[in-house]
Image (cartoon, rainbow, N blue to C red; front, side, top):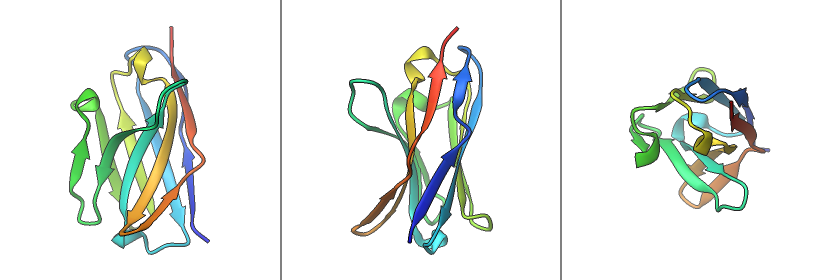
Length: 115
């Protein structure tokens, strides 16, 4: 059974930082492309960043220069380092694992950016 468990969310002030973690189990982590998505209230889920099985990284424009995705294959974990957080970054952040037609999601972790 595949499980993706996110952690590291919480409240933070504008300009602050958080590091999200996603621990994966039940899959061969090294062959999966991993990603982070987010969903704000009343909005659709949107892509934030991805890291391929070959460690190629991609970011959407609104997080470039602020967020960094990384993976640790020895720990079956993917991270999202978020710096210079803005109120508009407030959302539930979801971890995603993808391999061809197989896609798995975590339960999400809430990030709230507010003064």
